[in-house]
Length: 117
Length: 111
Image 1 (cartoon, helix red, strand yellow):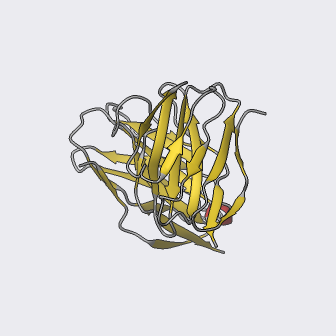
Image 2 (tube, rainbow over the protein chains, first blue to last red):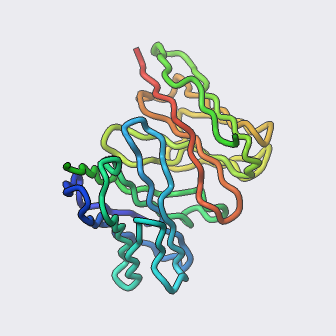
Image 3 (cartoon, each protein chain N blue to C red):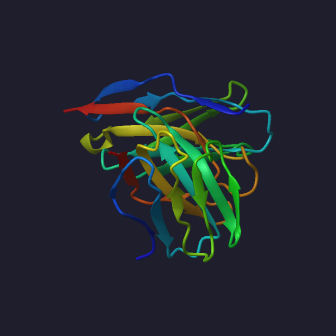
């Protein structure tokens, strides 16, 4: 069965430092997508970054990068130069579980990131 | 501005009542989704619809019903058969290979 595992319930990082949030996944489907979302205390889900299973290069979006290691089935999120506004829950998710469109996602339980001034 | 509107933001339900959560999008997205989030947990898929007049069950469809009569609208009804409906409900939409875009959510509480 497809599964996403986030082993860090909570993380602390000093402002301006980099932080890595871990995500491992399990699937037997050769075609899948991996997503990271940020959820502030207000509740909305904010898309951060996407990596396709056939993408050769690691995805980057501004201060966010995805460390994709296919053989290890890991898709860690790296946030560089942390800011106070980065404090939130972060969710790793995988598509392709139900087939069809990309929006049928399976989510991990999340990591709560706290940025210290 | 394009986006997804969920209403109401907060909803209180008495035991035994059905309630309907609204989700409207003006993004011209074909696919729409409903997710449920419990405290300290990730999101779980309730129902999804890839085209008008068609929808499929997700992981936790029991006690819920949906309709998709218009492309823009995908309302979710929480029926009395749902034994533990208190949760945060998120609606999303997507088009093609793009990432799903989420609404602001509805927090449902049983009183």
